[in-house]
Length: 374
Image (cartoon, rainbow, N blue to C red):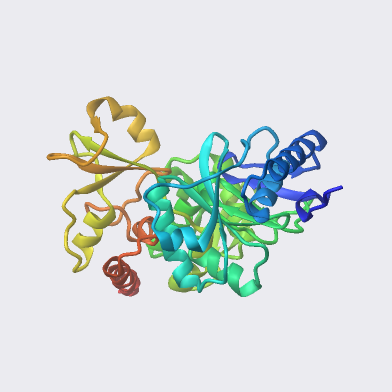
């Protein structure tokens, strides 16, 4: 009988933040049995796949019954040798989205690992989930801080691009003691408060300014309070958010819990009057970075649905096109600037490996906090 850490029937809590719903994960006998049969079949057929990749598939199938496809070895003709040597690779689909599983063959420094995974993601053109047999507290913190999506089969899962995070050992009957990722609406509300120049504000007022419902605002309150970023004072049906630290310190503590606002990026031709500059175009306008050859703009998902018909989408960059980022939340106002707000801009670009971009992002953050001091 095959035994694996990922098959042990310990209760775990799964948070799907985009849907704002809390599910209690229980063992799913049929799903696990089917996954075990696939594992046995792979072993008997001689398929060359690292055990940790099969364990990850088993783990994901147990957590998301019916939402995880079969797992197959993966190789891309454009993969350089150093990536082929560094990882065992496989592909599966989660919620219909392709995901590459990458298991390191040897210990790799965290900074090098992040760059290698970014290169792998660029070649694959889809999400990449780093597979680790185990992680120390320090390693896990570094991965969270650098927004590297990872899984430790049977124990931990952090995949905000799929709206998935699993906190080990959290009770479903109590609010989470550890928040691994904030909902996009929660993120937008916190950034708006940080940039307002105020240390506290009415939840109702903030939600109204951003166009969020009372239910969404209430959920944001719970997440921010659970993360220790704000305190909540309640008076009847009203509530007031107050930061627990300075603007900059709160931001530094919140960054590991935040994700890029960019839901998708397109090459488009069309009117730009209602769009905000974003990406490297916005960064170049706020720092000394050189402007990119193709301008970048952003728009919120709901606004995009209303004006999508006015644009022509091109498969790749061409003369006259610009990059259009569709954001999970409406780009936040920042004074009279034509660009997206600086903190969301940092989140949208922090995965870039270009050192010039990273230097400019650091400059932008410093300038933002200096401006708020005035």
